[in-house]
Length: 114
Length: 114
Image 1 (tube, rainbow over the protein chains, first blue to last red):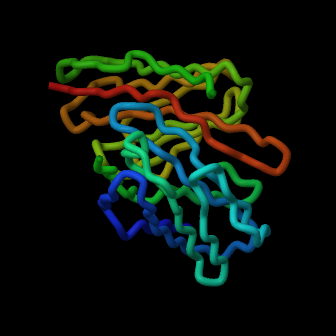
Image 2: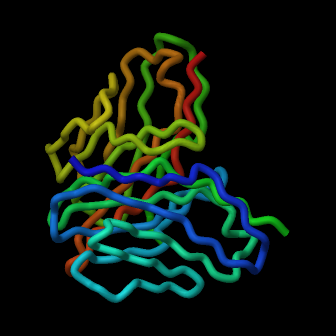
């Protein structure tokens, strides 16, 4: 079975600073996908960034980037120049290649302070 | 932006009532999912569907049932609501795009059973 672990239940960061959210996962698969989703308070869950396991290059989407360490089974999310609108729950997710189920971590609540 | 809709957004209902949570997507996605999420907590997969007339139970046991008669529609039914069913229910859909599979989420239904 696949498991996804987010060890930081809650984090805070000052506006304009950088924060890193950690995620580790456990799998015996070699080919899979990893995702970070954002769930703002009382709002819809949206995709932030995604990574294919066979790609060594870390994915980047504007202020969001990941540090993917396949051997360590680690997939951290870095948010640069944090903005108030980044305040949300962040979920790390895993999906085996050519499979149908996503496995989510327990989430990290990020609070961006002005 | 994903076109996936859930109704109602909020529902307060008495114990023993039958309820149906609606979920529709206009993206033509084959796969659809129902998650249960308590506030600020992780997502638990309760049902999923690979396509029309296909439904499977998820990782978390649930007294709810689902149906998939049309591609775009994936309703969830509770025959007799109980206070233990109080939670947020998230619907999602996905389809492969090239080598990618990404889930798109609806806004959720917050259910309170008195």
